[in-house]
Length: 187
Image 1 (tube, rainbow, N blue to C red):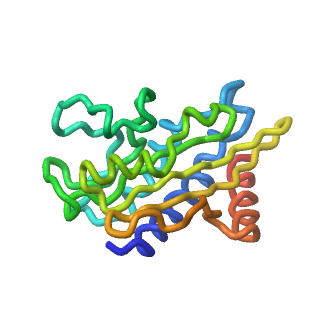
Image 2: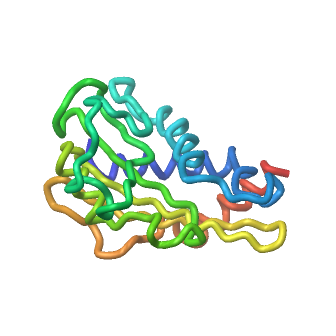
């Protein structure tokens, strides 16, 4: 699968997550923000519907049972693992490992909780994932109103980083339309 195709499928899955699961993001669901794991689960749920059945969509699938050595852990001492992976279970190599993704909800959790792309690329190279993605939802809550401004950054196994900085997932107009649909669905 080429990068543009995978990005399109992830954009569809993210749109479905935002619209169908909007109550996860709104302050009416409680006082705490949704965890990256929770959002990744829903993103994976909707991504599963867009990829061929030959791919498995999992979170933190440890096929080897090994402890990650320091060289492949995100950010040295902090052990970040991908929130979502798309792969063929039990098989190794880039032809069987499509995507590893890390999701962050907002900056409130602190910069130490969000790995750099170079850290994600260490895992990407170690396990042979064709693509690595960092998705930052940039959730902002003001009063009873929530907003997200998703940005992502991609790397390919062959070329490395696709952009020096994260880029917006949606244009402002498209994001406004999605947010309005999500709010209507959540009411």
